[in-house]
Image (cartoon, rainbow, N blue to C red; front, top):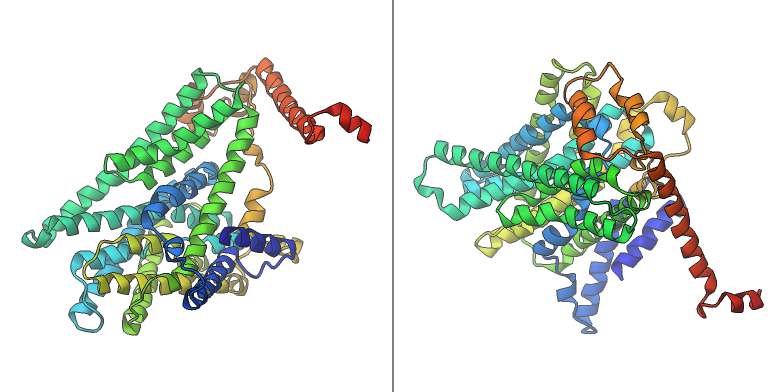
Length: 515
């Protein structure tokens, strides 16, 4: 019921063009309102929905998070992403680690100085890791609406994709150290063990996801399922979830695996599909990802009333200060370092927007519930603080991004004049209303050679991909294949239309009589 109300709410935001209110903020607010209603119902003893409103971390990590991450990788605009992959990786991996160490170290030393509640070293690092996961959904919508620099857009978006996986791996690393009882090991040995565990998780999971994606491309290239789209689509769904379950089963990061699998499957496997399945895959992924994101944000609002809280104002204030400081220590030094190697420089205005757009979302909240901390008061303290930080960044920072960008004049001036009245903050409307042309691939061998292989400006991995990898993993279509694909689209559409026209009786004669 709550999800259906959220869908109606998003529709109203789009229908009446209430673009000053991001969808994530609206859904979280609705979750808070529904949580209050549920509490009133429970207080009046009309019903008891404690089980239904409970947010279970396993449900989040096994059911809700994988579609969101896979869709992010699958719908990624790979040209801009791979052109900035070095910068994105540096911000995601080293930047997230820097933020985690700054926040975790600050919490630990403030606790030792009796300024805030004490947490041990591994618990502090675990909290610093989980709170470093950024989720700038509202900010990306604002970037698209105001036509900011595409490089800034891709840096923030790419960092948010990889950053989630890195934060989860870092948090799991801290939890693993907690379970091992590192009291008899020196700090340097602890650091080396944590670094080794992180590298194994990161690169092992990425390699597993990449390998799974390549295998799916070869399977669907050599086993022609295009004449039966239901089987073809079923195979894609299996390969989409396979790397996640496989990675988790062998103690790697399923999120990292499914992200890289989504990128590889979008780049190779997608082009081996029939046009019907290409459209079906794209729209299904976006629909499922939207429902999962909406469900998570609604649960985030409900959580204010769903479990007991432990609120400590000094802990909350210092954590917010450390989060903002850790983000600054991450963004500004790394940006200045990258500018020595980049042709398109990251300007001070862009750096400031990148720092300001470090919103926190559903992943820190789910990770805070997933932490196995003792005693219970410590878990409640971290959970409550995480919720406050998430709401603070979404409502305050997210709501201030648009006026800040316009104040700093960082958007494209020509695009601003051309679209003065057309500011669209709806991610759903932007991403879910059309089929992207780059996701409908029908290149013949001659067209592929004319468009790519004969180009002289290709170099590095792009040259290797165009010359060898892409021809090996993807099918080049013949004119007969193109003709069959168009006939298949027309046949399926006409068949569906005829079945609808037949009505409940299933008889066209009866319908003709009625007409």
